Image 1 (cartoon, rainbow, N blue to C red):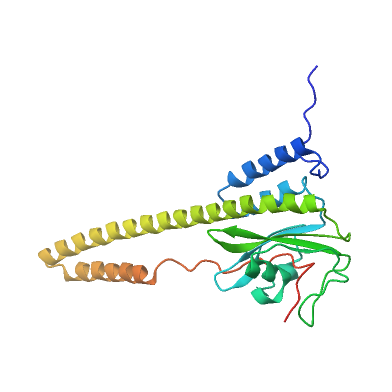
Image 2 (image 1 turned 90 degrees about the vertical axis):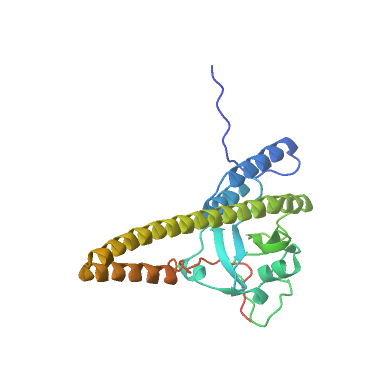
Length: 254
């Protein structure tokens, strides 16, 4: 009789379950590093984190080119009005994690002394843990979790969480590099296509010039001018819309 397969995901484990923890860590590494799309990497990271640790909400926040903390992924998904926020680097605990490149553990947010006069936390959230995502020699974001329980994670739990962050950070950078390479290929293919079109138009224009067909020559020159204008404009600007991280536990304005 065939033995039933164990479930892929189950209740969170602890460091005492050494073999089980190692198996789940390797699974997380395989799942996130096998993805080439950034959204897939982030989603898998949070999904694979659930069996390893108990937490209420988790999110991955990334630093954008303008110095703002922006949403990458959250579990559970944050409400739309939260997703629409942009958070200044110096105005949240997540920002502190990025700036100092140090993990921050707040075992009880009810008594924690957070900087800033208008700090806010979500109802029911008691503890917070955030670790920097470090890649290419700098912090690129934050992996963070929160809990409704005070002092929710043991020292072993936090050590386990710290081991996950470098894997996630590396996978994020790999996905970004893949996206940049794909965009470069598209630009090269577009440039080659336009060059070929320009050569075809130029050959037609030369024929018209030799044959004295002024009207056709003007038409080809007009097509060439439009093509060159498109080249000068360059590719369409990428969508700047971003999703912002779950700020339930730690966001507060200046």
